[in-house]
Length: 263
Image (tube, rainbow, N blue to C red; front, side, top):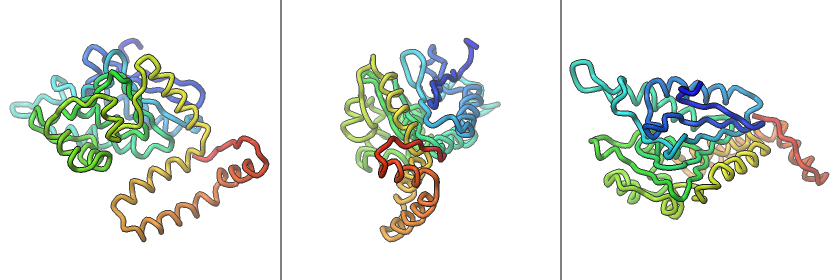
């Protein structure tokens, strides 16, 4: 399977998905989408998977959409870019944002366009210090997609979101960390070790509670304070009746390590 556009590997409860078109900086094609989304669905359905790492082969994470892919070539006219976004990127971004387990992007090089925003869809973004993020859409007359218009202002505020999106300037990983766009920048050589260490730690935590934490935070962004408090109460009510809460309390009281099972 050396020609596979997505490589799937794993170590215990951690599933690693590697974008594998290194010669084109892992730019997306329809074929690649046709493998990545099912790989995510499979990880979501597998009760043994408790964390996912998304990374890229070679010297880049993902350069965004491959503009030479047949899906981007119109028949006798311009391509229907909206249809491409709706068919491929909307379900991809939605799946990443609703995974039942934490998702970590290990950004090993350039992350441009939809590749940058796919990384930002993940719960944690670890980036090699030599990596960079580019909202390249304005350079070809488009707007950010793959969730970029929603993610950017929430991560870094309107002023920086507008600046990044309109200028299309390259943002180094350390600056991305400084402004709060990503979780952390790490030494290039230790990127995957750090990603695996984080994934292993998260895999031992209560997966359902982590997924509900993501949902509650995202949902509360459009709520008034009182509504957010009600959401917290209803979510706590559900989690309080689940196995992991009882296990966590029991482990705390008996001073032992908990074994979480909910997902």
